[in-house]
Amino acid sequence: LQQYKGSFVVVSHNRHFINLIANKIWYIEDKQIKEYPGTYEEYEYWKKKNQLNGAAPDQESKKPKAEKKPQPAKEKTSSREAQLKNLEKELKKVEDLIEKLQAEKINVEAEMSRPEVFSDFGKLNLVQEKFNQVNKELNEANIRWEEVVTSIDQLGGS
Image (cartoon, rainbow, N blue to C red; front, side):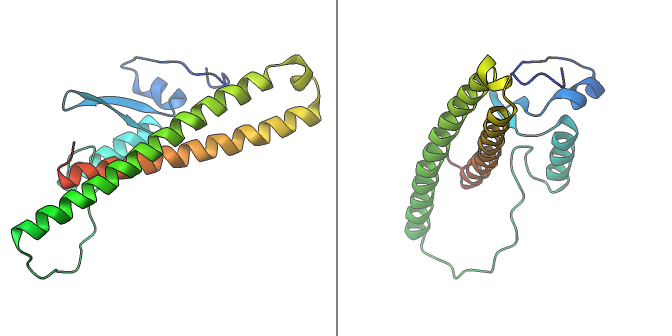
């Protein structure tokens, strides 16, 4: 399974097995399926770190910020709403990018499986480099998605 380049879903209580093969963890929280882009061991570390910091498992702890002058409630609300609106726009952009990169990854994987590509080392090497670049961009986009969702959750958005 570690050598398989496609996607598959595994449900198991064997944590060692999952840690050896999983590179993305889906978990259920607040009646929603959420995603952690990493191994099970990394997920467990992240989850424990956030619980120790008093944050919910899907939230990163905030760095302490400089104190701000008190603002009237209306200004705080409109500022919060503007931040939420901007974050939701960014979330949409990141989700669109992830969708595009996932489609591109599927296309590159299909190209790699063509006999004229995998039988020619030069072509295969070029396609493999393209695959690695798309995969890297996809991982970065998933990390950004998680950051934006965490920020939205911290602001109390949907």
